[in-house]
Amino acid sequence: MKIAVVGTGYVGLVTGTCFAETGNIVHCVDVNKEKIAKLKKANALFMNRVLMFFCKEISKKNELFSVLILKQQ
Image (cartoon, rainbow, N blue to C red; front, side):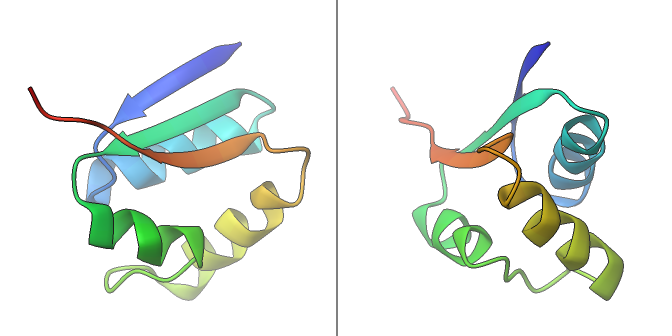
C-alpha cells in the first residue's frame, strides 16, 4: 500500500515509520525545510534510539520511506 503522512512531528514520524516497517511505501511530508534536512540524515531532536534505528533500517529497504517538502499555498 502507498501511504502519505503529512507532518513529521511526534505523531507523523512515528506513524510513518510503523507503516513503513510493516512493508508499506511511505512518504512523509512537511513544510519545515530544516526538519526535512535533519530527518534525511536520520537526525531529529525528539528521536530516541529505537526510532532512529528503524528510520535508518527502513531507508535501506528500497526507498520504502522517504521524506519530502510540502509546499504551502
